[in-house]
Image (cartoon, rainbow over all chains, first blue to last red; front, side, top):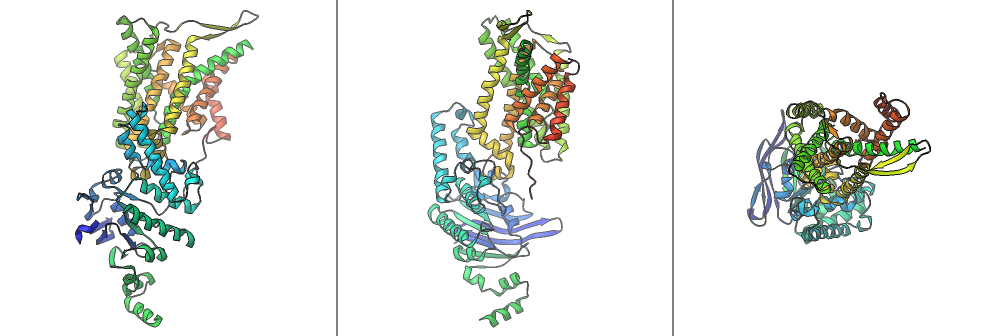
Length: 277
Length: 305
């Protein structure tokens, strides 16, 4: 089974001064599956993301990414742009971080930097307009347009990203992350601020990314309609530790999870559940 | 009227040179948010390299002026770009994550280093070169014996500026490098997450800015026929003023600001007094900034929540 795990987080520790934000957290995300990381506010979910994507250097533990070809990459040792370039991990943020002054299409073109960098022979072939470079640029535009089409923004390709509606910006961010051709896509609250219809559309988009691209997805989400509907596996955190994991159904019925969310202790939660059923 | 037309031509030429330098200030400010105070000295270095390579070519027996100019242009752009790259590498990059004033202080220090380096290595005297591009046209013969002159060198300066601006605009708006630069300008962290090598993109910004300053340095040499180790200071301050006047961070703004400063200075010298031309340029800057704090073309900075 362990060979099927694309991401293995092994006893991850993250301390900020005296505060332990993540304490000996271990979990794994399966290849070509959607794994959700949930928990009350302040549970340490985003800290885990920041460790995975190289923003923080963990105080301890290991984060391993296993590529399809059998290569294993220690993510906690990479940083910065290498996370995308070598490890092929992409992420989005809780707050939207598009390049607002650039068009939707340009946003997706920046994400293909690495492919274009190779084709441009470190800029110089690009400056003289070599045919191989033109072909690569054309392919990049095609890929960008394909993704714009999939998120329903093809008609807005030349509009500044900052002028798009909120829900459109969210989808454009996911499209941009996918343009880096990642093996693992990390989404930090992709449904935040979306209405019911929009989050339904998001579910379809994420499922199609999993099914068609075969990209593994790790997401943080508070919107339970998203988590329950599309996740294959759910990991629940509270106060920096894992308190439960399993299928969405199993997690939903776990008294420890309910207790964490309601802020009650375990006995009270069981009592609430029993009185409810 | 003739006098006015003549001053207009002179002002546009001077403004083109300021504009080329101002682009370097505005680009660097846009991408790393610092004022590169050594940029004026990069311009001076560009002028010196143009002069040295010109003298070398002439002493080698080359006589074809267009060929000489082309080689001088390429040599000074490449070597000055190398200076720009090195300065960013040793003086700014190590301080990138330090407090805000650190790279600025380092830039001021770098400016002194470059000034003194040229003073020591090239001597403190003004270095003249013989006029390289001569001749010109008389556009209009005035009644009182005053003629409006357009010299060939003025045509060369303006044409070179227009061509460079066109190439540069294309580079920023249409190429991968330009996209990366704009992305880094808006959100460096996100650009890095998308695989853009932010350090390299910043280096390229310095390289391009220095290459444009080298062209300005060469134009200055051709136009005035001299270089000296201290010329980067005043020209740098003027170009910085131009960048602020146009709206720092805005590329067309830098060019517009450069032209404005060049014209103000020329007209003030022509109609009022030469001694107070700098006062005029800086006074206009103050007035513009009072009424338009973001400059002529700058966008107001939106406070992020």
